[in-house]
Image (tube, rainbow, N blue to C red; front, side):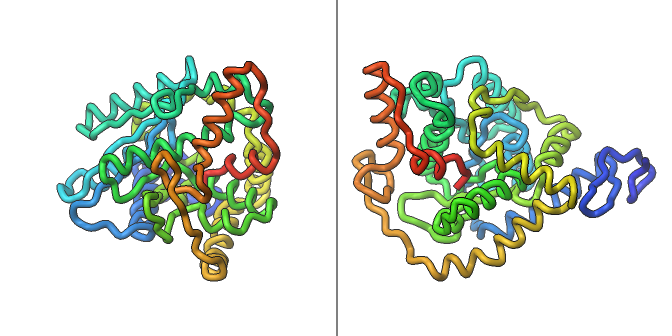
Length: 324
């Protein structure tokens, strides 16, 4: 099949709009949408810094590449890479190496922070004492704290994450099913700025996971293609399957979920009071005296010392297996 816009061979058939695109026109197609999302989500000013959360996987490496490509000729905007080492043996090192190599080649400041340094724990240690599903509970909470700490340290104005359309639509459905209206309003991009929290935005918000992967491949971006060994325990997998099946039957369903959310989110925000945060003893903003990261770290440390499995209730577990 030939590209609809030129005589080159197509690399993709975009089912939701019926277009056949070659590699060049596909990359342009992705880049246009990402630039539009950046303009829509954040208001950049000269001197601003963007911290990019990079695991080394296809989505975060694509995000880093697209932001670098967008701002490489602008001396008034800085791009920094923030990589978190969760401490997962035989998995994390490959991603760290991919991110660090890209940053070295492009002269992007690279910042590495580890769970071990911040919490005194590795993800492997946590998983060894956690019951089914709970490793993702810890990981999400710990990663968000690590990213926020580094972003504040480098005086970043925003944190860009590599979540794609699939991730966002899954989180929307998860929170609808759970009836968690407040968390729905906090999925990002963040419009309400809370003191001590660096706002996040999502450049790949309108890019399906399959297109993120293809973009990384045709752009020849080096990325880690390994799967986290704890992913199979995530509750999110159930919603991934449901939404993928919907999209197979009705192409564009993921966009429809996101569009519906965008229409109702302003109403939800206006009807919810702004949450007042306190400060945890660690210095990070918190809903209570102790932030969730410190609470979970202390629980895990105690259980590790006793050699007992961690007790996690469903109410503890479900809210943190999200991207919000």
